[in-house]
Amino acid sequence: MSAPLLSLRGVSRHYPTQAGVVRALDRVSLDIAPGETLGLVGESGCGKSTVARVAMRLTDVDEGEVRLDGEDIARARGRALHAVRPRVQMVFQDPAASLNPRTTIGQALEAPLIVHRRGNTAERQARVAEVLRSVGLHPDMAVRFPHELSGGQRQRVAIARALMLNPALIVCDEAVSALDVSVRAQVLNLLLDLRETLGIAYLFISHDLAVVRHMSDRIAVMYLGQVVEQGPRDAVWHRTLHPYTRSLMSAAPSAHPANRRLPRVVMEGEQPSPLDPPSGCRFHTRCAHATDQCRASAPALRLLGADHWVRCHLA
Image (cartoon, rainbow, N blue to C red; front, side):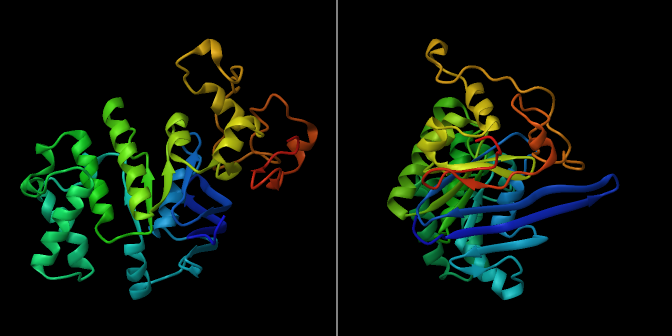
């Protein structure tokens, strides 16, 4: 892989509460190369959205480094942080909630240019029309309000807003999960086309493993605040090493159940609370293969194969 565009190294993020300390992220390390898509998967509460917020610098880290183009931005403030914003943008899950219902589409798209003092009025309006065309919308849409658009059109507007400042990385946090299946396919293909033409990198977060496989160059799997497996898409998909990843893969719906690649693996129990994670391997309370070593000592992230990492004693 080429030099990383975004690099997280040993990132931890804890949230103190009245009940204790929530360990949202625990020494997470991830890389995204320029023009690459990293798919991030895992159960709700595993820390995926916290990774997105850290990558966007919407939340601080307790320890570790967040590097963008080699520069540590984890503790950037003021003008330094303002200069980072155009490089990393985000597409949220619900476009109806992420767009201001009181502003027109054109005003929403022009706002980033005004904040970052890009161009005069005519140049900004020309940029709005250009970006609307690039996401498959007519420039006349600029005078409409969000409620006048369909769900797919609103998400295209959200993507257009993320493109306004020519970012190097776009974080997609469940960006298509609120859309109908047919519209979802159109938006996914739009994202792929934009990556091909503009060279954008994506951090693509989703519960839908089929979507992640379609979109990603590499896949990272999270469980209870830790990355338990990561590697090239085909390696993770066809040579699954961690029992948690295997259970996720086996649960993915298949159009032809008789041809299912993996036998159905049912996890026992619920995901433990991040307030009190288990000792040793955090997955051992739900793993059918757990040993005394798994219960006693925490496994390190080990390299097994070409850029294929796994956090498991038994892999």
